[in-house]
Image (cartoon, rainbow, N blue to C red; front, side, top):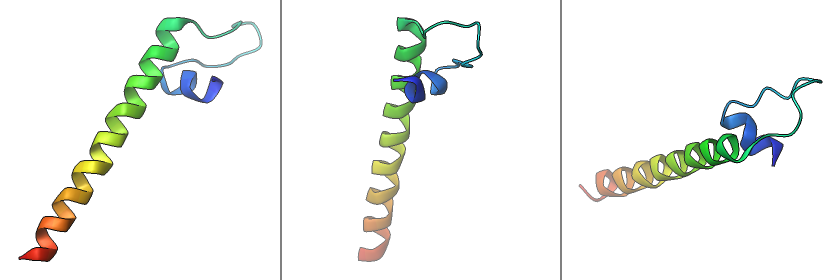
Length: 51
């Protein structure tokens, strides 16, 4: 969970406590954006190989 929170801006310093829902949500959005980019890159790659 902390890995996802880090994508959302969580620094994980000693006194920071646990990541909040907003930070986790932002991290999940970044993961979804990355997955969409990979999907798009694969589609473009498949289209170019057919031409």
